[in-house]
Image (cartoon, rainbow, N blue to C red; front, top):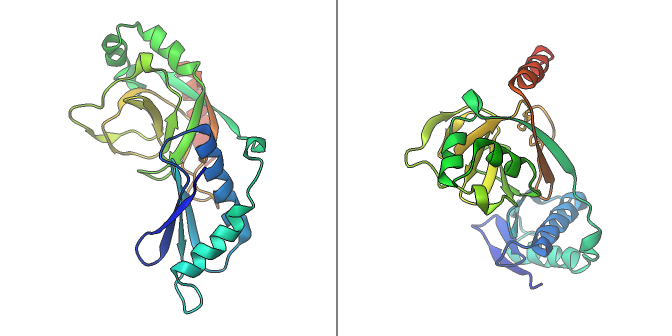
Length: 232
């Protein structure tokens, strides 16, 4: 796989591993991210993985210009091998589907000529992967959803999406970690907190994670949420 480098402004470099979202590209993005983070390079400020790129922000100095950082990163990346050995985490996300937590579930069902139960079954039995974190703090862009339940974004976005809402937009599914405006079709909500502002790594999910959605009842949701809030 051909890796390219390009400047992003004066203090960042974009490492691109391909033009398409593939398993190999995902593994390589994860490997590069892990390698650069663990290298603890003094001038590196932040490492941001995306679908097929890794952006490295760094402090510019007399000894660290673009070419210096490019050459340093190239030396590290040349040694990356055995990408298939990278073992992703699997994280189960409980979801209370429909009702007040999923006001667009019936629309998704009718749009695809399915029943509500069929949408829930398809969504909760898929094999998913987090491709990147972005848009809002901790927001995961998740691939692997069946086209059988794909649905367009709302014509008019909502001004307020409740935190932890699970949505569908096109062929993607995702979870809103915080309250924010948004246009995804809401099919459920999880009691699990994805944005952890007090933790060293504030996002529960990371690029490359495997996701399993588990249906839960409203009573289970209320119990989980009540317990979580009681211990905060």
